[in-house]
Amino acid sequence: MDHLTKLEEMLHRANDDIKNGSYDEATNKLEKIIDIDPNFGKAYNHLGYLYEVKFKEYEKGETLYKLCLEKSPMYPSVYYNYSILLSTLGKWKELQELLDIALNIPGIVKSTIYNEYAIMYEQQGELDKAIEFYKKCALSTLDKNTLTRAKDSLDRCKMKQELI
Image 1: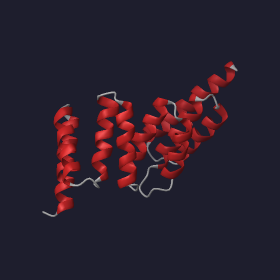
Image 2: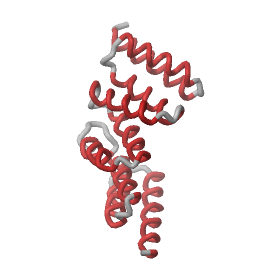
Image 3: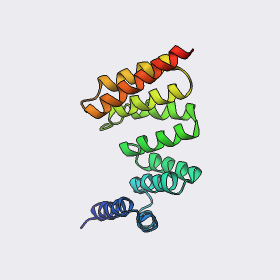
């Protein structure tokens, strides 16, 4: 088994731990991957997810996402995870910069990125821009659930506009 295949297998086992709620075990596996190869960016993304979502240590999660971007800038998952964290923290400038880059990453799901733009604008009260991006999200997806969620979000923004 070559080096990269071994790391991917270890990452897969850490993912299984996360799915099973064994967060400490997953953390240990991910830290071991980083010890073996500090340039294996995917491990930083998964560790960042744990620190953000499971341990609520947002600053540590952000640091880990940045390391992933530095080591593996073409890894789509980090753009989804990091964008949610930046949105949670209200770091709009950084979020917009990240989303602008994400749109050019091969394999990225554009509807997801458009949805993140829309959420960002909605949270800032820029409802016209939010509506524009929810429409882009809806028009760029083939997934019925994503389409339904975008339509519901459009309706919500339109209701908010009526209050202004």
